[in-house]
Image (cartoon, rainbow, N blue to C red; front, side, top):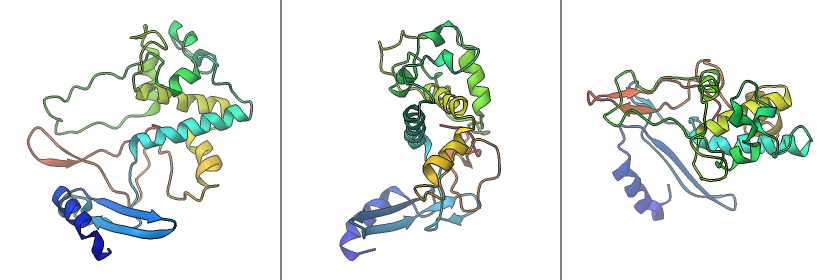
Length: 227
């Protein structure tokens, strides 16, 4: 790392202990590397160090690729963002005829994610893995929307879960396959993927960690879901 970035390295060192979950930092300007730093571990329990080719779970950054998939399908005439979600996703309650794809994209559908129950601490068995199918079943069981569409802006993972299903129905293939063929491969994003099956993670994948109610640190389960 360049010596003039010593202050940045010191800042990272204060916040990221070498023996804890780590990070990879790369700053580029016009193709020139201005800063590069690897600190911490990929898997704390195993003591696995981070490497330049470590891959990470990026969480809700995935939503922009779901939205891009929707945009591609609209451009091709496979859907319209003004379509109601009920016209694409089967077996939704009556509110599905009021909510459009556009509402879901902009978090104004009226959907709300279920409240978290870990305010007293995360249980030792951690945050369980879950599938798209199990979450979609919960959405279908929601008889009434918490808010009418377009009355509240509420960031909702459930909305993008439905959008992932829209991509599958409109394209005839899973979101993972559509995004790989239409976004990731054309852009050379060879390490990017939607993980929608409980397949083993690549050996060089970093894992999440959490501190449980017993005060110990555990490795987070390998989740699999769309968004």
